[in-house]
Length: 579
Image 1 (cartoon, rainbow, N blue to C red):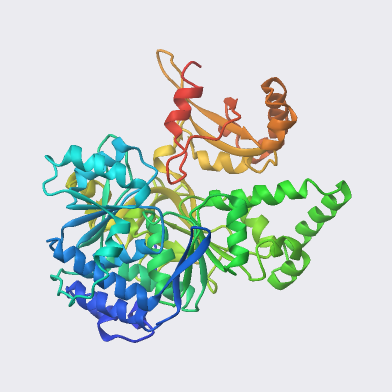
Image 2: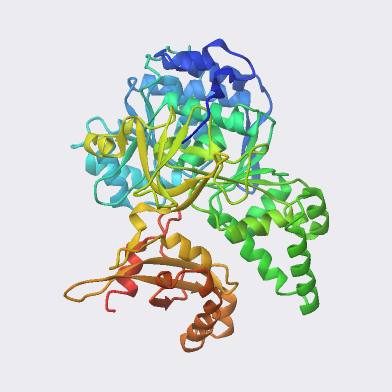
């Protein structure tokens, strides 16, 4: 079991008494804590808080304007008749106004429900029927959709209305005396965020004010309070971005630029132009950069490619970042003059990608968590890190590994601490199922080394169990096979035979790189034998029973959720249904 307990000395730089850990341990009202948070932000005055690219130019908002706008929007909520605990849904891409809408929710005591703009109308309706907000705030390009849902669901959601976000700017222009919001306890839900938008039963995760504030303190302790320049790529309904990329950095006076694109060329342009030095990312973003860099490397002459490979192999073992950045300065220059650090979460980052970027001189801080843990449980930091690990627990958090037997190397990860969610909204049974004596069952598989660093090795529900009782973590097989330079994506999953006595086997779906697909014009009769031959090199890295019995190749990307998690069930249905 690993635990960190040095939060007692942690407080914000302004040393506000009500923001100390002692006060967080008591059931004080939310308003005192939010006022302290706002006071910290106000101390940065005319420093640029946010910028987004709009109408061909960067448009920004200062810290002073952010706080003023947030309080005006809080007034607007109160004038609409919203009471503490009422819910406000937000349907918008990231922009300068989004944080103000959210901070206004925190200030006024209403519960924010950030929505995923990538969901379908049916999925959004399902979530809104479950959440029952009084108000949905939608940006111009999503307002028609929001209005359509409201008009259809008003009978089931009383007093439900839609407001276009851009119109609020006009509504709050006139100065009015600030209204005093109602009070809530810090253990009340500040945010309800949904982890599933399917037409089944949605999972609304209730995150309290206390959860958020502990998360902010823990991240400040791990990463320090130096002002950074962020590029925000992940959507704000993603709790990883919301807490780690918005709420925590604001307390350090950071400037945050919204990318609002997944185009690698534009992202690199923004990084260079805005001198960005910190990015929160999911592995897919780093894989995208890796793919672009590798594509440029293939354009070099053969001897230059060989030289580059030799230099990377040599510098991998040298821990001098400045030397790496000097040797690979051309690649680093493509990202600008400043050293960039990536805080990576949301999924396991391949060691191959980690090694690639750290060898080039980039900083990679792997972390681990779930929406239910606000979300960060463990993360590496500048002074506490270990390659390929997911780091140590944040302060006041602890983790333990529960094994099926003493012979097992890995086990299920359980977490405990003040960052654990209040529970699932309207679903006590599911809440009770994941908690045991204050410990939260993450459903993930991992191990802890003797220094307290966590290593994720799989997902409990993805476990493949063979007829003889052998258990296989798909992630382990994916890790071994994804080392091949010709493989862009891979998913290993269980396939059950259609026999009278079904058996579970290891299956794999592989997507080759674009170059390979192009070189052979998508001809599977040539691509598949080539890949199967290359994969034989990795047989020695896996026990024979772990080797995929069924392998299929596809030229289109693997199907993913809006948070870039692979839809494994769809792959089974589309590729192995007739095996």
